[in-house]
Image 1 (cartoon, one colour):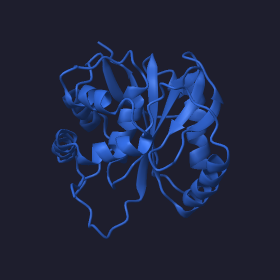
Image 2 (tube, rainbow, N blue to C red):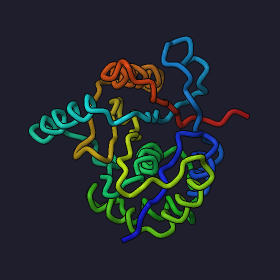
Image 3 (tube, rainbow, N blue to C red):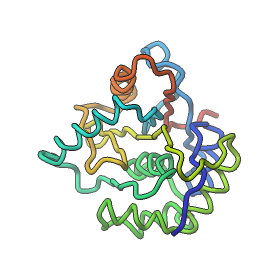
Image 4 (tube, one colour):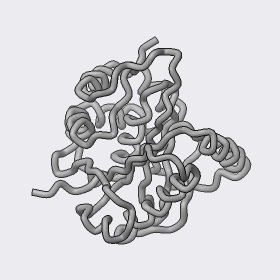
Length: 230
């Protein structure tokens, strides 16, 4: 079985190198969001196409996720037919999946049609979230690109028996609705209405809810997929 040995770091330099290798246009880039208050969000270049949150998988979060998953199974709701959602089938791929969710659901983010990501989208467009996850798991081009870029970071390969305590999720504006896309969950999570103008502020509010579940925890990081500033 193929493995994704080293997790991606929440580091814009590493993540940008990764998305460019995957075929994303340099008109777009990943940036840090240094604060979630309105005055800090004003420093983030627009348009923001996705917000990515890295957070610790604490006991409080896992209890919430279990309860939420049961509620989603009972009433998953309806989602746009062109929503690209995928499940995480292997460890250490959550950063890649958050990036895939961010890019796939923003068709105005240009891709090199001959590169890894565009090929993956074409191959999996009509498949289920589970099938998309399994194909990613075995996609040697994707794995090699992930491993090559992940090695540039400061993170060492974890012990196979060591629990990875951090997780990436993506937030996108899909047809005027704020959606949380997390490969560990069976369904997307709806967080209410949003717009191109308010998306960053709306996503920041949801990130604050994640943080409020673990008030003594400081290991959170927030990033945005946004237009590159010249």
